Length: 466
Image (tube, rainbow, N blue to C red):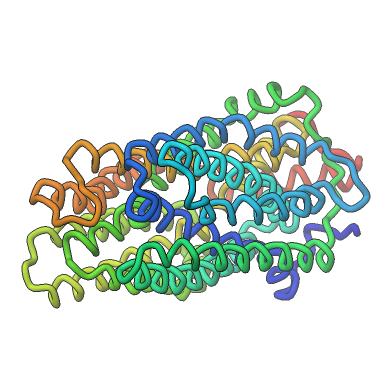
């Protein structure tokens, strides 16, 4: 069960580590892209109500994410502290996901809203038990500055593969919805059930075949509040948490607003899955490029310029409101989706790798390993960003007079395009400006790792002083 994390990982080990991410990518993609629209257009729940549900679920995550992260840090089980949590979360996540698409027809609108609220809260909580320990496990599997890029790049590829299947499902569901909305209520639960079985199957394979590495560093010893204080005291962590939150608010726009723009601005909802597939496939295909460029130019500098490129690409989406010819709209949307995908692939690959470097810095300062707590905070920032964007979208659509399944006013169309283009532009530019202050580069990390490795080799414990 024990292996030296300083030994290079095989491709097989990296793929095994990434397997749960494929099913999770499917579920989270379909949730982010379709559940909001499914709730408003099929279940006829008011956008503001669904926005509130997603927003409140993020407040709940503020409790569950750090608790799960901390508990996974201090768990002592023979099967492994990370693998045990991942396995426990599988069945509840599958059941909650089924609930998202299986609200009984007999329920009233208020009862349906309550059902959806329970399903959203239960699913995000269960997924926390899977994703936070899995991300933490990755930081333990490899301590190499650049190998982490490849590890998390393969993990992101798994997420995208799942996302592509989710987009194919999205195209299927929206085509059925356009003919008979009630038929969607029969099809969606069946697909959700198959997704749940896939999640359980892939998790079992991953945790059975891939062993956890050993670590001589101490687990957090001052309780969850003490661990949280250590995260807040870490200047690199504070900055990265803020950047992660702001950047992912912008990135969530393509999930929150793309379907609305495709249907109510372009008049062809069927194009949305193709645009998002372009975005996701491109982001995956360019992961090897970002991994190579990171070695040449450095992870930090590369991520900064990728944020700028993403901001400019998203900004062009606003022009969809002013292009009258539908064929030109399609060409412009696909082109910008491709450009967004190219640049977004950098952040999803380099981001977790840099986060792992920040955890190494904390170990040097405190003498403790807190992967669970750190990735819980970053996972909360990511999910909060998505929830904030969904909530913001719901309130904006309600405020400008959105009416489901009706022709929209010019004001509503402009608001939809602004959500897809201008809002992400602002978010990514702010994130890039803040990230320009981040200076934990390769040289500084090499010094940190040298001190940590020397302490482990000489005493078997991690030094408690810088």
